[in-house]
Amino acid sequence: MLAGVGAHVPPSIVTNEDLASKLDTSDDWITSRTGISTRHVVEADTATSDLAVRAGAAAITSAGPDSRIDAVVLATSTPDRRCPATAPAVASALGLSGVAAFDIDAVCSGFVYGLAVAEGLIASGAAQCVLLIGADVFSSIVDPTDRTTAPLFGDGAGAVVLKAGAPDDAGALHAVELGSDGALVELITVRAGDRWFSLQGQAVYRHAVTRMTEAARNVLKKAGWSVEDVDRFVAHQANLRILRTVGTELGIDPDRVYANVSAVGNTVAASIPLALAHAHEAGRVRAGDRVLLSAFGGGATWGAAALTWPDLAN
Amino acid sequence: MPQQEVHAVVERFVRDINDSEHVEVPAAASLGEIGLDSLSIVDLLFKLEREFEVSIPDEALPNLTTVGALVEYVNSEKRGDI
Image 1 (cartoon, one colour):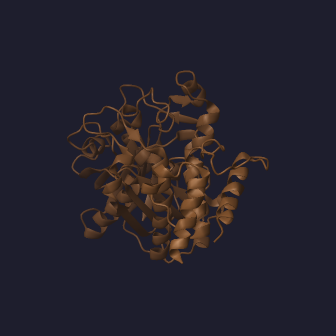
Image 2 (spheres, chains in turn purple, yellow):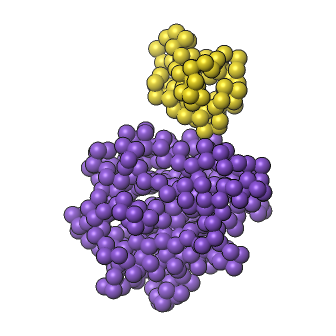
Image 3 (cartoon, chains in turn cyan, purple):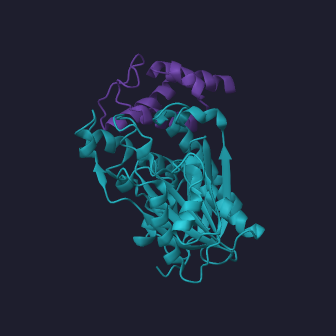
């Protein structure tokens, strides 16, 4: 079950006007196609681990002093180093040297994959209390002169604490659904030898809507929930149009679709936990709310999860 | 199914997107010319797939650049079903 949530975004903000002053684009163009107004970006000396540590610390505080973390799972596709994984350094920086720590990479679906991994660690007895962090610094791989990708991404981190619980506990993770299709590898990628990330926007939009809708339907079925049971839909924040279209395809009331993409852009693996943290802070998810998550990312990968929101002190 | 029915759905979609009843949607027009950006084109594909219960695969998309080609494709897929 979920027992804590936290997030961190770097202080520096890039507005659409800032981008329009450097690229052949405009606030109107970016807003109408993406719904994004601002995004946070790191300074040159800040890495994924720095954001992950801040978000992880916030989630641990949220979970309270009884939560003794014994595993750290970091979902990221922009690790500090190509080898080794970033999670051990994050764990040590959090004062957790000695615990299990590793990265997983499912790009924008990484956090949903991480929920299943964390649940598996607990179910197997390998861990009692898992810190799951989604963190990415896509500004390190997105070409700042490419008007088609530069406006889309922001840097950030979000984290949750998971521990063993009963199915009727507030915070229970009821079901997870995961999938992938390697034939779509070219849609979202940094090709071998390339410095910059590339994205086939139109195809991504189409596959994202299709797969996020399908995964959400499947996870609802696994959880035994109807669409009407969903109090809050917190999907991967790639683009406001994807969120709205998936919501419409699923038949979810637009008021129940949470979006913070306008303020933070696509923060990749951080996207869903960052949205959960922001929704929690804003009172848009409350203890006992039935929350549906859905994501699509590079690979291609996709996933969805059904959970109830925990009763958090912080 | 008459081709006009598919064309009418496309026309309705294009007029809603442009927020105008006066937009002409000739068969020869490219999808870009009638005010559809790349994501709106996908929204139109979703709508056609749903309303006419057809599947428009990725491989077909490069040839479906005009209103007429798209309408004809949906119509032929629908005929194939019967």
